[in-house]
Amino acid sequence: MGRLFSKVAIVTGAGMGIGRAIALKFASEGACVAAADLDTAALESVTSEIRAAGGTALPLIADVTVKADVDRIVERTFAEWGAIDVLVTSAGICQETEFLAITEEEWDRHLAVNLKGTFLISQQTARTMVECGTRGSIIHISSVNGMQGEANQAHYNVSKAGVNLLTMSMAVELGRAGIRVNAICPGFIQTRLTQALIDQPSLIREYLKSVPLGRVGQPEEVANMALFLASYESNYVSGQTLVIDGGQLNKLA
Image (cartoon, rainbow, N blue to C red; front, top):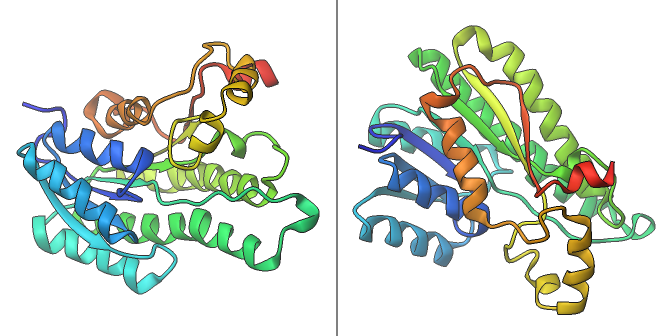
């Protein structure tokens, strides 16, 4: 019996990268997974893989910046399974732009997807949990960039710093309802967003000098932490920002 047997989980950004790995991991551990993403093909791929392995998945095309879409994610999930036990907010964007060149549109888009989207789905899910008396777990996929400044990513850094503080604030307020809220802050993880650097041997070798473990992290390693936070094993863990970066943040501090 899996560690999430009979649990219902929503995973946004489930079509690829970290979100995909989490959706697959949760399903393999017995959860019914509502997988939400904007990319239809990617969403079909992950739900097909879950079902082929004997898991249960509900694909939901949605834009997390649109409240009507967010409400529909929560409503469809609850209508399908009658509960929501876990939420993972993995939908996000990251575009490198020098600070002096960031446009208002780029700034607004990063804040909308990374922070507003996290707020909207978290609030609506938390409302459902409170109404149903569910002692659930909300897991935000943030970033070590929310803990330090990094060149050419001011808009992204600010959005993730906001996610970290949102996590802490929610944990304080929702704890009285038995709802735990935590954030995972990955460092350099192999995803579509980082593949361009990984494909340049000389550049990646230089970059990895800043990572004590000396390698790139994998989405499945983030998924393992998400599984812990979703399970009963972390019942007394809330309001935390948990770093998965191979020790890099300590070396840069």
